[in-house]
Amino acid sequence: MTVELTFSIIKPDATRRNLTGAVNQKLEAAGLRIVAQKRAHLTEAQAKAFYGVHAARPFYADLVKFMTSGPVVLQVLEGENAVLKNREVMGATNPANAEPGTIRKEFAESIEANSVHGSDSLENAKTEIAFFFAETEIVG
Ligand code: CMP
Image 1: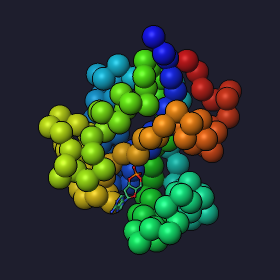
Image 2: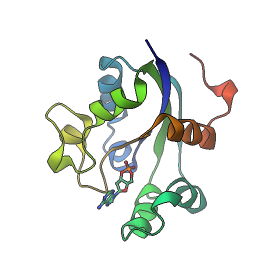
Image 3: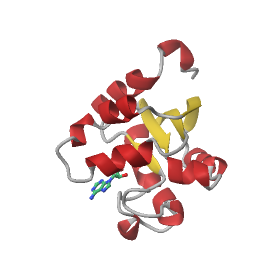
């Protein structure tokens, strides 16, 4: 049994439609525990730095604009194999390819406005959690 922490963002398209609770219900039903959570409006500098790995991609500028277009909810999730479990409950990046019942299948508007972000590896989870949270804010 490997209990992991992963990082999650409820994106501006979901907060705009008041879907925070609906997303959290899916996360919790999947066995993930929300051990830290805060609402924030990302600055351009924060969004650029957070998505720095995508800086060379054609969608980067639009992505930064979208992620700063409204409030987000930043989360740390805990659970057994939390990184993979969260990616399963999120569904594929493009909602057109997401499995039925997943967050993106049910809620995402497009490949960009896809309602949630989740870390893609344990290593990235650590970096992403540290980007937004102090250890004292994580209450397991
Ligand atoms: P996320 O998992 O947060 O990681 C990068 C984000 O870029 C992705 O979700 C989408 O919101 C956004 N994005 C926009 N266009 C694309 C694309 N063509 N491929 C991948 N991600 C995209």
